Image 1 (cartoon, rainbow, N blue to C red):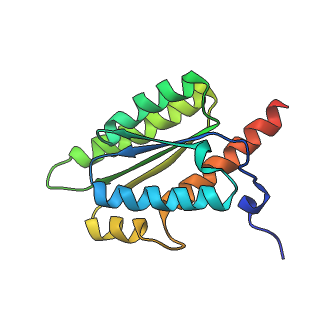
Image 2: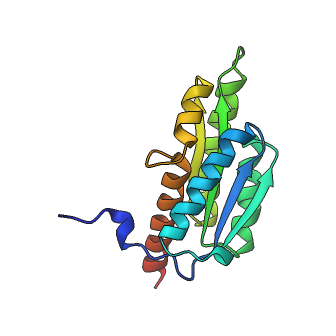
Length: 156
């Protein structure tokens, strides 16, 4: 049986920044817990993980860009939750957050994982941030490490 891709990743020696959006804090805290758990499982030591709070999902790209440009991190995991409300504000924030984070990754060549839930219902966000195998924070952390390992391999 083939191993899952993340089984080939070793996090020892990698430095990872978790960016935590303060907006929808209960949901995002679940994503952070999942990300921390996944990073530990992949061998990233606790002192290899830094956590930084940002006001909301809209601010994630700017802070990710500053962090990536610092050269201090091998990967960044952006964690947040944008829940649809009564206006179209949701669409603007979700779109700009996703596009901004991708732009940061391309410009800085630092893996930036998109761990931002964009959902139409808060119950969906709670389900995706709950402990267990479907936690999207854990999924984003695994993706960030896989990308960091690939970048490192290509640079060698």
